[in-house]
Length: 217
Image (cartoon, rainbow, N blue to C red):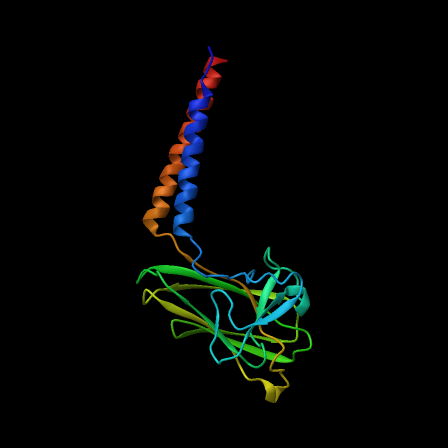
């Protein structure tokens, strides 16, 4: 007896596709140009008055470059990052819209030092609330920051503010590297429950198919 496995395979694929789409809808990226791939510096670096998604809050320019320029390894596919200290101890920000008040989000970014920059510190805030202070003393590696936050408004501002460390020997235009800035929605418990139920049904379908195949044999 021949078992028609195309239907079972198609149903499984459709179920997986549905779950994947649900996951994408929940975890959509809300940060614009968080990997700083735009503009593409082609292995170099540049100073720009306007960079997609990002604003210099103290009237300076925005510096983006290949991570290797700053003595850092590639952290993202673009292998680029922003140096917050462009010409001075700068502050850069991005205002995120389309948030749902009361919903949870996961915010993350990678922070790196720059060899030769001396002591550096970077204050990070979201929606006017201080999250943390990253710091380095000239080390050249990446450290990941991850925070779970709750939206208080439909529009919130993420801010990276360099601390003036010149009194400690920190250089004003040489340090505080960031990349892989990400903000994604955290799936609600009901969504997780639906996905688990779906995967349970998927497992049952696979087991049923195996049983039919074994019986036919």
